[in-house]
Length: 340
Image 1 (cartoon, rainbow, N blue to C red):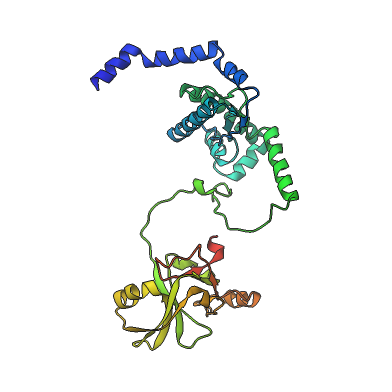
Image 2: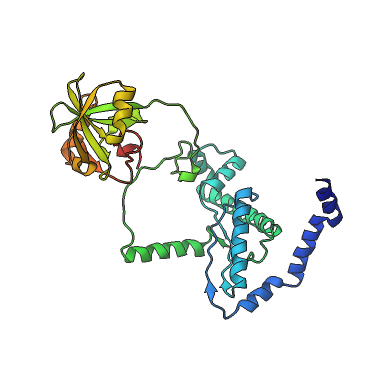
């Protein structure tokens, strides 16, 4: 440790770094590289843009350094490399920063302040931080990029390019409309991207539930759910078509349960201590379309109306993607309005 500190003091690493940057700038090394690339095969690189919310953080630095390695490598392999850096200047990250500066607490206050004025402030802030981040990236050694001409998402050229691309996709039949639930911020009434969610671990209730079959006497489908509050909105049960399921008879209850074969021993004889007998083995695909009686049919009258609207409501649907036979009981309660 002492040796490292002494070496750093002797070399004056910060001064050495500044001298190298000054040399690159004075000798116009970047321009010479670009001239040497002319006429070579193009290797296209598109920079995933960081938000211009302030100084670069460790993740952004590591990300850019790895990209810089790749650009250098491709240049040394004889390619002409596109090296345009990008900056994301849209959305909540920058808007929240401006709200803090202006003391704004909700969407209504933005409208009162003036949407045009607020947008202008966001652009000014983004442009100011962009210049700071440019220099910080250079100090990392990521010097040989086109820092004078980054693509910036608030520029009309970028926005018009996006609309042009969407229009072309629409014309080619590559776009379609669909509906999905989105989490929204209660403060600013804005849809949230997945990476904008805050997560925390909590200890919560889960339960096993018997749901009565509408087709088979004294027979119940067993589900396990960690979100029991969503049962009011249940519309279907999902099974894995290639997983093994069983129908078991429980002597004490004089009834039949259907669940995944893998969960029988753990749940019935282990957790519950019931005696059972397997009366039928089958794959999940055989459950498709089986009907059941909603467990809260009397408590939630709308469920009766829902059942009249579609033949697939209160039936078993198949999904390999969303149903795992290795956990739970192999049957998944589905409440679409509570999530995708």
